[in-house]
Length: 336
Image (tube, rainbow, N blue to C red; front, side, top):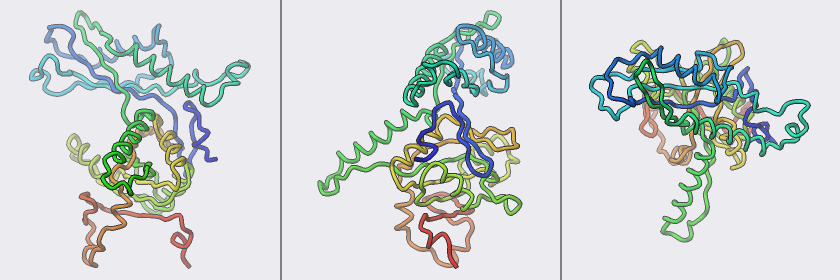
């Protein structure tokens, strides 16, 4: 059994190369005006009022650093309609130690992983319910807040999405012979620093072998692929014109069994990627492959030698600065 299979929702998971997956709760906040005022929005005042609300009863989250809450005013406030949001924010709850079984508490120590998982989801639902729709009064100006769990952090919703997807695909199949139940086997992780998957002192580009070693801690891998996360960088480049290309990478990982795929997805949801010696906490995006990336690549026509030399060649409609793949077959991985 892999470490990911027995992982509890509040436990960190150490990975090779000094990396680790740290548990945390991430909530997306959206703020709307709750009255008819048109006074300018003060981001610092809004953040201070929300922090005070979170740290006091009934929520009582005293171990909540100021840096774990960010509030950003949306542009063109004067041009927005009254029902449109005026600010957005992100709340991280990184200290989940109070949900772990305590030593000396016989009842808590006897909790099974399933019971501890149920306790975590019950607490998360309760917190979201308490935060949803609250009103903040800032010197007579009222704001209403809505709360949302990011899709890549909600494992239960994600599992239901692939079960519904393959169920509908099975029912829509016209050929009764091909009506075979399918399940996903490939996860997509994007927005991770390329240098964290590179060979130390060799290159800043992610290494296939290093990446394979890291994700092997989550389950047995059949094949994987690495590429620049061009779409993410293009989105960030709109706000920062000096962004250097190649900082982030996108990884497709295909597992040999559905159980390994599911355990890996469960371990990646609701966690941040950290590296020993670095203060950076990376909130990557994780999803499952609907398009059949490796199946399409298998039948892709071979390119000419000129096309192979072209660094900007496109694959599946994406520009690809570099790409690597590794098979679990020893004959393909290691050659004399």
